[in-house]
Image (cartoon, rainbow, N blue to C red):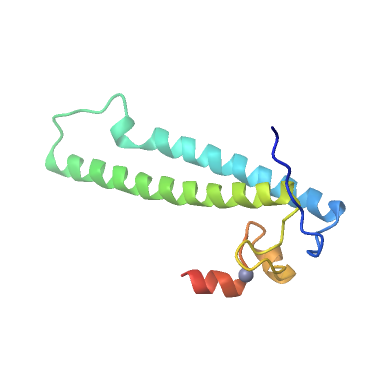
Length: 128
Ligand SMILES: [Zn+2]
């Protein structure tokens, strides 16, 4: 059985004409993050098919650093992607702009700067 999503009638949701460009933006960003991530994974020296195993120490260090760097970047991109996907799915269930913690509307100024935000300023500060 399909689960029905309950919509809180008290929460004000954004009109569709406002949500459409946001949805478009989020989807574009997810697409871009995915591409960046893929190219990063490809740039990892550990995944280089022509990788030589009898490197000099210097080359080894370079390789390790390169690997570490791309791992950090991939982690960061993944985190961002998760956040964008979350915002997008909130939008799809009509909860875009509603704080997932306290249920209050997120400040529109905040959303203008950070459209992927799913927490209000207060709740985000409380979390970190
Ligand atoms: Zn909140």
